[in-house]
Figure 1 (cartoon, rainbow over the protein chains, first blue to last red):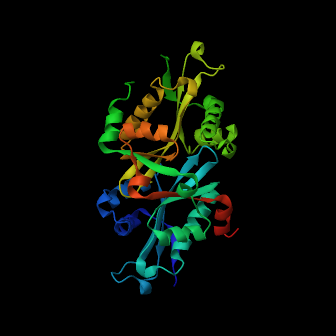
Figure 2 (figure 1 turned 135 degrees about the horizontal axis):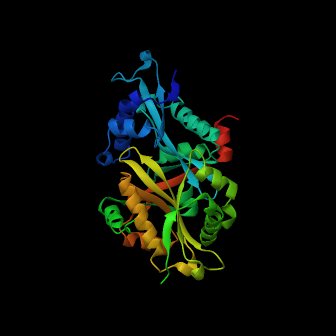
Figure 3 (figure 1 turned 45 degrees about the vertical axis):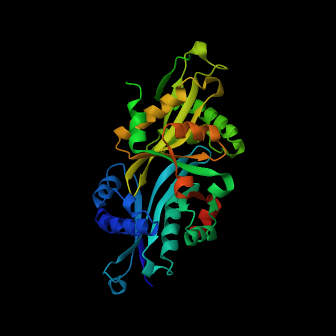
Length: 173
Length: 169
């Protein structure tokens, strides 16, 4: 199947937002999606963007059942490792189910790797849910290591009231 | 009780930041994994496009240890969650052994939380090694959630060699 991978534009945010929701449904957490295409437009296309994004597009004749030609996306940003320096973090990678098996996911992943390499990133990190075996296998086949398994790293989060409580106790300037 | 100030790191702090990075890596039993140099830290944190931000804690000369007055640091950057938007990611957080239990770590965490809220971040994220029970307790006491245990998230990394294979070069 013919497809094209390109940098997302502000106009793609509505499609990306649609697919973010599809991915959240797959990950069994749709009620956790709190932002819409408006926040994506604001945060991804401002002077100092908080993320970068790629989309996968198919020609009109291969569009999806509902008529979509943007059928996959990758959302990533640059991070920093105090051990190794510049890194990239792949936050989301998604291809609509009817377009899988055509190399689109691999194309998106490789493009992110290439863009990271251009910025001298030495590592690409991402996270996967432990029950998501197809995805874990996809990344393992490309040489990814499960650091939670091999080194015992756990993700920790502060949010909502707990974050506010901490913030309110900060010393005044 | 130590007298200390918290401030934004400056280029002159780079040697101290690298020293503290190595001390933290030693504490995590992974000292040999630190490949960064002072030159990298300078370029990556204080160049045109900073990849990180840093806070340092400083004590007066008379309370210094081995002549060091910069005795703690926190390195962070902003990330993005497509479900909730901007996040503050805490990459490294360390207080030298002799200065612990004085409220310095607690103060750093509060300042970072305030910064997160001020910059409209929904959340502050970071990773902790599961055998680091003291740190896990420190965070849990303040209301942190362990997403690996609670939601099953696992951290993956693809290193340079494998990345190069993917770019076909």
